[in-house]
Structure formats: structure tokens, C-alpha cells
Image (cartoon, rainbow, N blue to C red):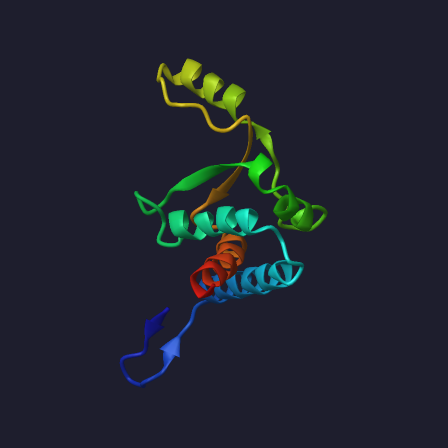
Length: 136
């Protein structure tokens, strides 16, 4: 997104349009999930995604992994759609990574799911939850 120096209008390229539309779709979907009256603990957990990744995380290009057992209703809500979260064994996955790389990073949660800094839908969804937490 950049401002045209000859006019006071902003030009939005196709990538930015797509990202903004996906983010808005995520926010709308998050708002609809909030209307189902999910447990507050799940809303707080999903809001953490926005807190952790809304600006790219610590490095600016972070991915984060979360405990799937803390948000079963959230994962059920996304199940069957294009933004379904795949869960995996975080302990085994990190053990494999540590073995291959010769590192000793701490394990992810046993049942984990990941979110990247560039997942516009998830950031929008989490933004709706973050906004709800801030408004309570």
C-alpha cells in the first residue's frame, strides 16, 4: 500500500487487498464465534494469538504454537472449513527437530497447532477476540 505522490489517494496493490479481505473475513468469523457464547478461557487463549503475532512477533516473521487442548470449541468452530487448524504432537515434532539440528529447544504442547505471522484470517479472528477482551 502506498500513496500516489500526485494525488491524495492511496493505491492498494493486489497483495494488500487480498490480505485485508482475509483479515476482515477472519474478524467477521471471530465475531460470529463470539456470538455463540464460548467460554471466556477460550476467548482469552485465542486473543493471545493477536497479542503474540499482530506485529509479526519478536522477529517480525514469527510463527507460534499453541495448546489445542485449551481451545477445543475454537478448533471445532473452524473444523471443515478452509481455515481449519491441523493439530500435531508437538513433543515428538520438537524432539525430531532437536535431533536433526543438534539443538535443545523446549517442546511444544503435546497437542499443538501453529499460526504464522502472515495468516491474515487467523490474525483477524484473534483480533476480534482481543477486541472483545479489551472491551469487557
